[in-house]
Image (cartoon, rainbow, N blue to C red):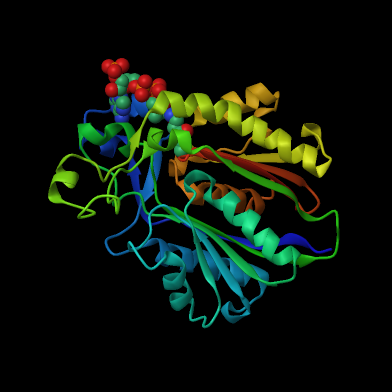
Amino acid sequence: MLQTEFISTGMYVPERVVTNHELEGYMDTSDEWIRQRSGIEERHWAAEDEGGSDMAKVATERALEAAGMEADEIDCIVLATISPDHFFPGTGVFLQRKLGVKNIPCLDIRNQCTGFLYGLEVADAFIKVGKYRRVLLVGTEVHSSGITLSTEGRDTAVLFGDGAGVAILGPTEDQDRGVLAVRTHADGRHAEKLWAPAPACIKKPFVTTEMIDEGLTRPHMDGRDVFKHAITKMPAALYEVLELAGCSLEDLAMVIPHQANLRISQAVAKGLGLADDKMYSNIQRYGNTTAASIPLALHECVSEGRIQRGDLVGFTAFGSGFTWGGAVVRW
Ligand code: UT7
């Protein structure tokens, strides 16, 4: 039986840094409100014409270099995003083209903040059965083009940021290494609690100027309800995978949660009885980057030496759908 190991990671965030003070110029908000409610201090915004595939390309080149691999050694791309370059085709094929790789499958995953863990579950299954040997797993988001920079859109505009994180995954025969457990969940009864109602192929036509004027193309969120579910589902997801892996919370060297809100991470850590230095947070610098947030945080932990080979790492995420999940990885 093969296990899936992380060969290398990479990340990229756009050059432009947008502080909370800059946002004060666009809408009725304040640095104090944003910091207190979310922990966010700044985020990065992509340049004009810079898409999720462009950012993922740079992150992938960095991961390839770290692995000592060439792009043509990748035999499958699994890409998670809720902010695709185009309505169709998926962003994976644009990334494939930019990497100069031909004739490999490119699978786009649309599971929002849990996208990276859904992607990990799929990639893990591909590798375990011996179908692919080198899977490029990507989380990439350009939120800055979908937010509304006015007081109407302030409840979500201040939260989201742009960036890309990737991991190159491959097989190992070491049974106590790599992905020990990964499990994802969904509950569509809550779909409208965090969603973008348009564009919508359920309507004819799928987008109108009225939809745009009414703000239907921007994210809508019942923040309090999402918060409430996040702080219960994220620890439950972590406990579930720990049990599947036959490990306990005390065995974890680091927990990497989806970065939705510093208060959510702190509440989850408190509920788990986890020391602050075991719960990684970088939302202060990037905001909520949805599918990119876990691989961005993972790459930082690995490159800063916070995660060493042999360490047990926990992942947990919750987001729109609702979707949630967890994973336990022996690094
Ligand atoms: O990644 C996917 C999952 N997403 C999440 O997990 C997000 C979960 N939710 C949250 O993180 C929090 O609910 C928020 C950070 C979104 C909001 O924090 P909150 O403490 O729940 O605030 P609230 O939504 O209850 O709003 C409080 C007040 C409201 O004013 P009133 O009605 O009390 O007068 C809002 O209109 O804050 C107002 N408000 C703002 N004020 C200044 C909302 N957005 C802003 C803003 N600046 N940007």
